[in-house]
Amino acid sequence: MIHGVVILIWLGLCALQDMRQRQIANGLTLGVALLALIYLAWVGATWLGAPASEGGWAFAVALLLTLPGYALGRFGAGDVKLLAALALASSLDALLWSLIGAAVAQSGWLLIGQRLSVRKAEAVSEASKKQPFAPFVLTGFLLFWLWIH
Image 1 (cartoon, rainbow, N blue to C red):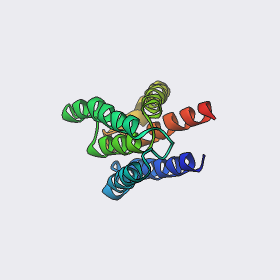
Image 2: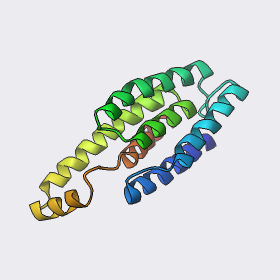
Image 3: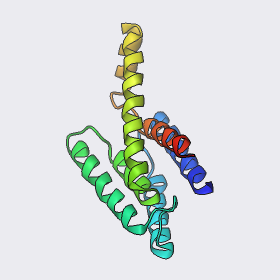
Image 4: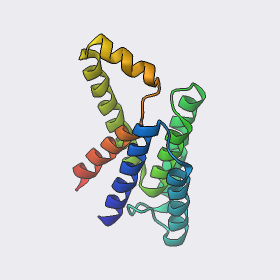
């Protein structure tokens, strides 16, 4: 239970930084990935209690799903590292449901944004064309976490 709260706090910090700066510091992504990897090797399970092999599979799937998006300019490097760290710390189910929840939340946000005035939408798009993804990952993980508990 407490490990899930730690992941939520970490994702919250990443989301805040992504919303403010449109990037996530390596200390937040690579640092947590390193801690999760050490924990995985030491305990033989992820922070959420999944077997080490599942953490490895989740990591591979995270890279498989995000690296093409990074190559096409759809994901930032911070997003790739965020999801890789989440995979090492959680499980394949948590990763996939977090991504599904993120996609649903982002779609909802875009639909709401379309209903805003054109002026407001243009002002936002001129400030930054890259939309932060970490807040949606946080939303997806939170929905997953609430669903399993």
